Image (cartoon, rainbow, N blue to C red; front, side, top):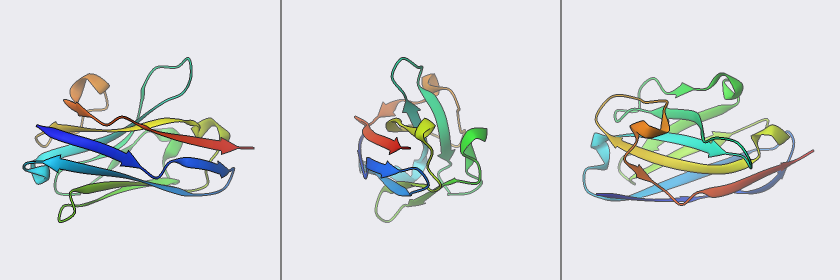
Length: 124
């Protein structure tokens, strides 16, 4: 069992930056692949990016490539989503998710554990 708590959301102007954190409690964090998703009002939950348990080769949706990065600190049981050059269309609730193993799913159904989400609002 893994419990996930996101933090770091807020209101930022277009072009600004935010860093989201996802703190995990429970056992064997290093055995989990971590993903970030977002959901805007009236839209489906969308894969943003993810990172495998060794921190190698993070993957991102095309719309955030070059602007967002993901890292994890296994000693702190925390995964981060650094968001730069934010755009109004990045406005959404951001969720972190975890799945046991090495695969990096881009589908929400591929994850077993979810945080409660943190709101990111980008003003134009």
